[in-house]
Length: 206
Image 1 (tube, rainbow, N blue to C red):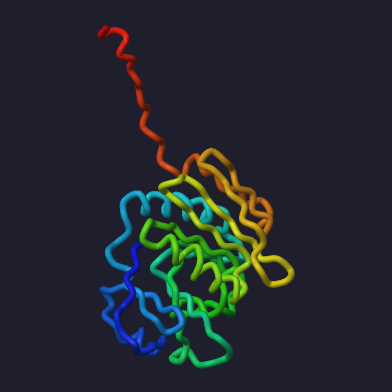
Image 2 (cartoon, rainbow, N blue to C red; image 1 turned 30 degrees about the vertical axis):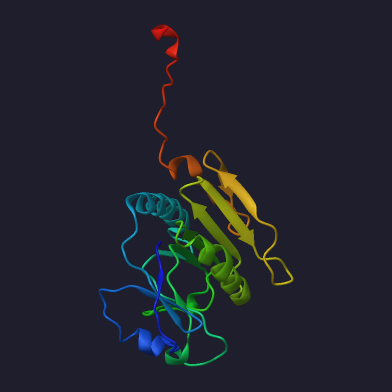
């Protein structure tokens, strides 16, 4: 999703965030606000919807909850009150298994799994800034979905508290998720079918 950094030297908190217009979408990373408008593209929306559908069906009736954007995830540095938190993100899809982290505001603390659907304008932030952010806060599994390349890149948290090497899946793969035994995501239903291209030789014109 496209994000625009707000031009300001001021650092903001969740307390400020809660005063901003409800018809605008923002994220805060270390006090720096990023504008989440315009709305996601049609392709983004279809991929997000298909992934969410598969996650939702699996977790229906189970203790873990799955949510999609807009859904606030507050990531405190320590035990500061909500209004002092300076990082609030809205992942495209997230799974939370600790019900104590959930409240009417969203989620306080790291989700178990986070999915971000990247665009050319957000690729750097999703691959670098957010990857480091989710690693630092202990997200167990981080998925980066590239509609352009039709790939899903997954990072899984190792026992040392750092993400391991990336695992890459293509648009015809099925992803088994060891974090949630029995969960399998079929990527053939996530990425829209490519149009059939018929190539015609010029021989018949010669």
